[in-house]
Length: 270
Image (cartoon, rainbow, N blue to C red; front, side, top):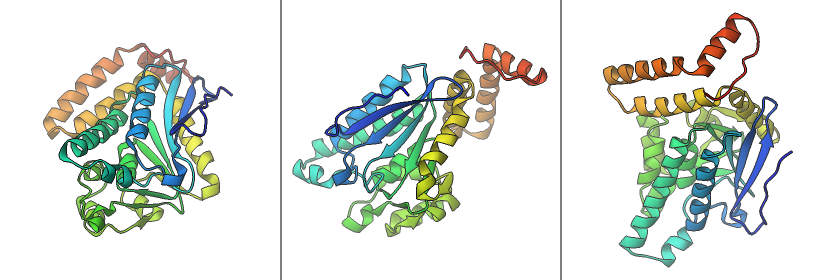
């Protein structure tokens, strides 16, 4: 196993786990357990930098985002926020967070959230920003800003793009925690499993995806998010152009030939 580790004092840990099909899956673990992995400025900067680096590493086929300690992520660090009040500091903080969430969406590799404990406020936003999410049965989710006089407006952006409007508004207006089963019902997470099976289920999903052509995954992920913001006719024109360009790739020809010849494909990422 190829492993990259950092001391426990680091706010973000990275471990690269090799895939049976080749390449590796990068596990990024938020490492502020005593603060329930609240998104401090330093943690957001470390996570953003790690994603930039991973985006430049062809060997990494997928990313798993996890949390250490009793929770996945409890949102922004409120103590840090209150220690530095003022419009300029607030604007910089939320701009940094928004850029991080968009980095996840724009990363040319699938990102899977591995969720245990609570994922609240910006932590729930983090889950919603990931491409996929696997949650433990005991996980819980909320956008509770309304309870402290601070509407979860930036988490709302990701949440409202994942779940139906009525359900999103209920979470935003009540601030109440919802269980993992309900999160799956409304589309916030893909799979719910026992806590003991969380790592195995997340790994299985990541390896299934990592076995596909990395070029195809990158093309498809970008196209998915771009077309979702377009009117229907524009989305079809754009998707048709993407399909045409995809068909000209070496991996598409190899994949079709392998299917017709009933053999495993050999991806080159080109």
